[in-house]
Amino acid sequence: MLQHVAVANKSLADYTHLVGKDLIEEIYALAEPLKGLRVAHLSATAFGGGVSELLYTLIPLMRDVGLDADWQVIYGQDEFFHATKRMHNALQGDPADLSESEWATWLGYNELNAQQLQGDIDICFVHDPQPAALYALAAEKAKGWLWRCHIDLSTPNPATIERLLPYISQYPHSVFHLQDYVPEGMGGTVHIVPPAIDPLAPKNMALSPDDAAYVCEQFGVDIDRPLLLQVSRFDPWKDPDGVIDAYRIVKERFPDVQLALVGSMASDDPEGWEFYNATLSHAAGDDDIKILNNFNGVGAIEVNAFQSHADVVIQKSTREGFGLTVTEALWKAKPFIGGNVGGIPLQLTDGESGFLVSSPEECAARSIELLADPLLARELGRRGKEDVRKRFLSPRYLRDYLRVFSTIVSEA
Image (spheres, rainbow, N blue to C red):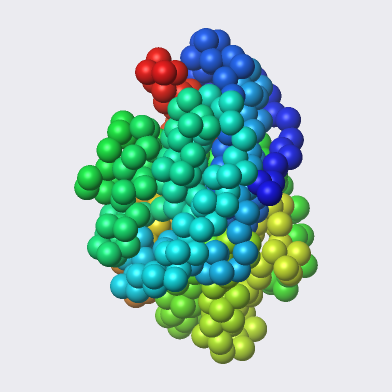
């Protein structure tokens, strides 16, 4: 019942002109003693979220350097994903913990997936809380185990983390974006590996201004008027209502400004439609607010076009594990405004490569500043792009995981 995910081929050598020869050679050297290593990635969904975006690049690159990497999606029905969405929210600070029946549902599906997991694995790489009980239930099916947390655990619901901790603390190795996300009582060896984007993926490859404008125009954007943009899931932690509030303040100064909220609906996020509809309601029929998702035909190229065309890109999260959309916007040399939370401050320096804000009013003030000063906007964008080139492209991400794997293999 575990579903194998097909991925495309990628070549590490194609990234040399972006990240430099030294990093590429370091990766090949790290990979040489790991050739043939059987790595099984397990996640909750194959589309619609940051984890899947990372794996669609990471796994082909692991294969390209000689690892036997595979990706499987766990089995779950609506009751499971409703429970794990509540868990996700609680771990990011929501006061509502799972009910006893929801905890039982989570564990029951983990038991079901543990039974289906095939053995003879060198490293079982488990992503996020949905399948987190697998090590406790099937440790004998892999020689090495690694749990990867992709969410902000800095201020979790105490009851939820207390219930989850016995499962995740058992893992011999774990990976977090930031040291601040590591919960007290975490056992094993903890590794800190921030995510990265694939600069050669359709979402991040270079688009001409004309091509980007053409795509945006198809969705009703007036390409001759300024555009504010947020790309994210429709999720309370992304604060789409706060972005709309900020836009309304900006519109008082720039009456012709437009706003696009572009997101994707994921199979493991049953609340997504609820918050999408709530966002539509908060927009109150304003024709200058475009609210779009993958069911409107918005895919990777369309997201790229919106990010490439926008005058200001926003990620006004109130909780954020890392935020790949932050790095995507910076890579496109766009002036960026982000919530001063979670992994966003890791990706930019306030006032140098973007702005950090804590309220709709601050977001509006920075947006007005950037729209009024195109030279400042261009300079922030230039610095942000160069910083991403140095720190947040996928070859560095691969390098960091090869280091982790080397540690796991040496211990085994």
